[in-house]
Length: 117
Image 1 (tube, rainbow, N blue to C red):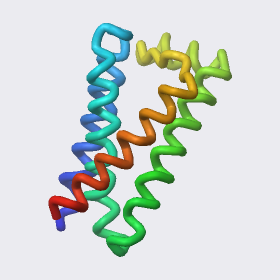
Image 2 (cartoon, rainbow, N blue to C red):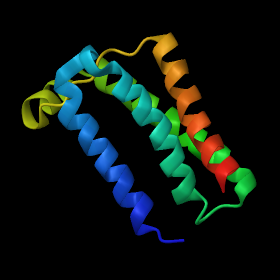
Image 3 (cartoon, one colour):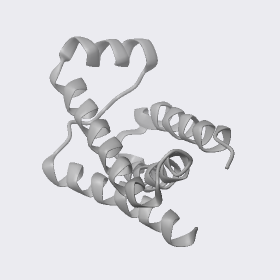
């Protein structure tokens, strides 16, 4: 399978999230959809390197790393201010329920891809 397509798709997905982060909770559904699509695209990418049995674990690990990134950004005021000023990238403070929902959606996106293919 081509590596470039899922990699570019992930980059575009993250870029769209950064650009639209200024809208805040007005388009909250888009952020949830992006977690599902992120899991789907990560499964596409990881399937090039890993056995099908390990793809779900790798996608879940990537989702956990992303949620830790969001937590670190929100806790470190200097980094958060830098991202807001330099890239106009805004991250809303994560809540436990939001983090769990995000991880479930990442996992379901990967499951959906593996079910289809």
